[in-house]
Length: 77
Image (cartoon, rainbow, N blue to C red; front, side):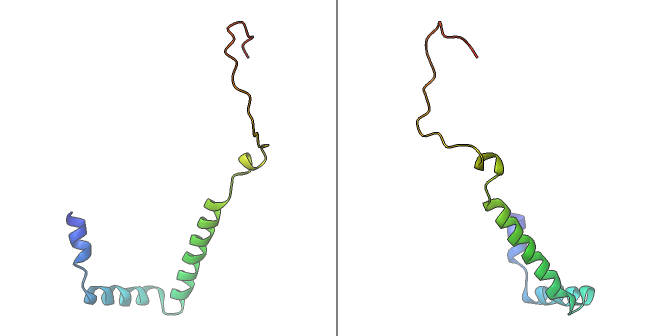
């Protein structure tokens, strides 16, 4: 609850101050490169989570699997 109150109490003056500090630390030319790298990382992460793993892609699809036998005399595997 306290963290929510603290996050909501950020003033525009604080945001401007943080932006100025970031510009001073990284420089105006490096900030677009920094965000471009972050964007590429997010895109790669999203594409990796959408891909199926090769383990499941190579398995054949079974439409009608045979039910397990309930015969007590059947050999155990």
